[in-house]
Length: 188
Image (cartoon, rainbow, N blue to C red):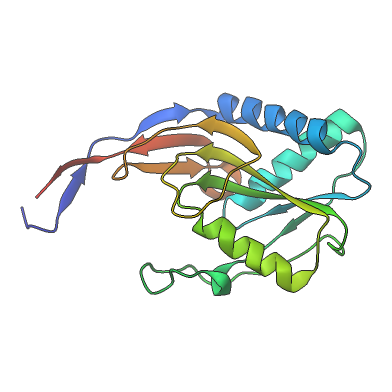
């Protein structure tokens, strides 16, 4: 085996589709407990998987509150400070469901790790407007912060080793809904 090759142990499922659904409903209740009286509340997902998670979260909030929660998406590609170190995906659209000035924006992402994606999202939001407040909702918080970023609403705390990989898959983007964790079998 070449020195650069790594083999991975088969991923272990840590959340199945039902557990993800229950986590999203729990997250919706938490958001509404904190901001139920906000005059303008909107959900904004960070691509790729933050967008369908945001749509699921807004749908759950609508079910609870019986009124429409507007949903948008925020591409943060050009705001990242780590573009040189890692490949990036194609730039996508930013679609806000309305003006964000004086709104409570619930920013949604799938996994919170270093905090760099969220930092980029906050910078992008500053260029769009001035929200009353920004709340962060993530499906999985795995730790390993490089920046002082903390989620307000978390579906599952998942302490991991730095070398482990957490992967969120959603029906809307991957054809299956689950969260898996994997790690290299051995490093050469």
